[in-house]
Amino acid sequence: MKIRILLFAAIVMMLAACEDMLDKQPLDKISGATFWLSPADAEAGIQACYDALQCRGTSKNMSYELWGLMDCFTPAAHPRDGGKFAIASGTHDPSNGDVASMWASAYKGIARCNDFLIHIDDISFAENESGRKERMKGEALFLRALFYYQLTMIYGDVPLILDVQEVSEAMVPRNPQAEVIQSIYDDLDVAVNSLPATYSGSDIARASKGAALTLKTKVQLLEEDFAGAAASAKAVIDSKVYSLQPNFPDVFNFRNENNSEVIFDIQFISFVNDGNCFEKMYSTRSHSSWGWTWIHPSLWLVEKFEKIEEEPEYTIEDDRIQPEVYDYFEGRDPRMDWTIIRPGAHTVINGNVDVLYPYGISGYTHSRTGMTVRKTIIEGEGGIAYDSPNNWILFRLADVLLMYAEAKTETLNGVIADASVYDAINEVRARASDKLPLYEVGSLTKEEMLENIRNESIRELALEGWLYPRFKRWDWLKLNDGFELMGMKTNGDICTFADSPILTCQYFDYYKWWPIPQQERDINTNLTQNSGYPE
Image 1 (spheres, rainbow, N blue to C red):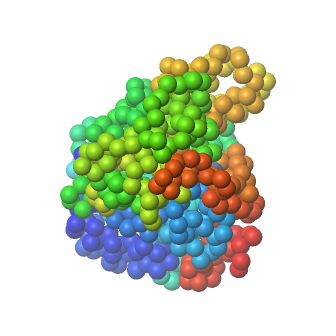
Image 2: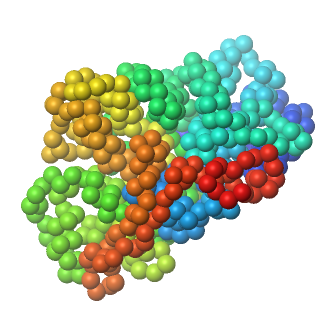
Image 3: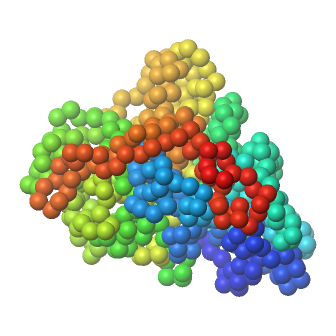
């Protein structure tokens, strides 16, 4: 069942958690006497915390729902336009609207979690429901940690706010990243001990012990605590709660939601004003959500998918598509075609009509690279503009397996003889295709294994948003320096490779951190700017 906020709770929590963390009402005075009175109020309050993960029908809210866009800030893809385009191209500054939106969406979630955590103990639960109260606290702590991970991974040092503030108290400075990370660990340690391993029925979408451990793994990797990350990831794997789906595309099929591979996702449901907006952002104009094609996959990404058939058989179905295009794309790791829609591939558009791509890709929403997203969208009927039913998966087992393999390898030296590392990466590869060769135990050095894990992570997780934190960890963001975005030329009469770069990106070392939004600094003069950006 979809977790969705009730209308009454939405109204109350809108008052309780303003979009801008620096422009909040005194929250306890608004809601304390009239809202936090019953377990039903507590339930509405925790659902409001989950609700902060969503865009709520606006593309201007850079919430976790649009996390897939983070991979556009790597060579794997490029965004269509606007503030995201500036970030990806390396021309952004503190006045960038998406830089501000990312900050605001996270602090909105934090404000709601703080409000919940401060008031939950004021509510009396029945004696036999004490476990429910502790579980709900664990959920709020997990979500607060998730929002702070978003902030500190992107901006570095950020204000650490753990209570509900009066307006007069809101002029807070940034805390060192180490303090923010310690607070995340504190929240997650409680969450791990408070949350159940599994749920059933209407509770299926709630944060679990596995979700808290997965987030802890990501935080430990952020600070390069590889031994800790390996232990946290292994705890998720060894729990046996999760298993890979037999077929890669089934992971993302909206008719197969809450499947065995999903650890935590953002839930949506259509026709009750609780659908997603990412479908509208990522799909094409020809799909049923009448999409905007925000994500333009790159040929750099395509190159990461191994050729597993040197001379693949294919039929040229459209003479506009040149033979060299078919030769380039055909015979690769099948995850390529499950991740992107490219020339020569089929897609199902509005009306459940099967077409050969490129179809209807001209005009404003045409992908600059001639490729678009398949992985997370609904093909055929089912996608609805700003109200699609498909969930956004944040955490899944394949990601955990690859994080474990990477973290464990980082703790070793020389030839990698630990079978658990090979088991983890081979499990992911074997699911993708029986034509992909598996790695034999003891066959790779540390450097070779890390290279293979990194490339496997790109193939498996592309366009889900988790390449950006990895590239930052691997010091690969510098690949954007002088990166030439290449793509396909599709002018209606011919489809072949573009002769020249679509654009050339730039990168400076200080881009590792996004700038602190100027509009926040205009309100709070105690906020310092990240080095390199204009004051």
